[in-house]
Length: 190
Image (cartoon, rainbow, N blue to C red; front, side, top):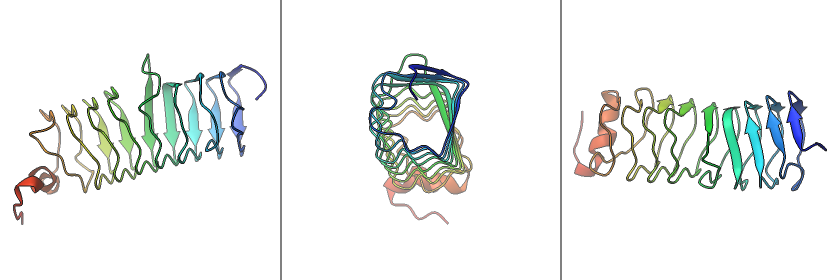
């Protein structure tokens, strides 16, 4: 990765070093089985890129731009997304490990989380309106002052969401998932 601008390039089985991607742009690139865990993402731009089975565990992804980016089978354990560039951004996750990740105060309207493990994820003050949580484990995920209007939780499980501390108008829940909305009342639902 010697050029500052990479277009339509495929990167596979690479263990990227700390400064190897700083201030670089990647457009329409594919990353397979790459390890980004020690990278410095300062000034990095990803446009229309797809990541397959990549490791971002505990990575500092500050000041990275994610525009029309897809992540499939990636590990984002303990990654803080709060400092990502929020100008023209869009990213989605499928089959990803997002345990202990932080999305604090982000505007993630229409984001898709499909078949992801999201244990203890921080969604405080996050705009998740029209988001899709499809078959996601949301055990101990924190939803506080979040906009969940029209979000779809129908197939997800183990969540606890306080309707009085979040906007949930027209959000979709399954009958089984209703207990996650009532847990603060210490009710027994059979």
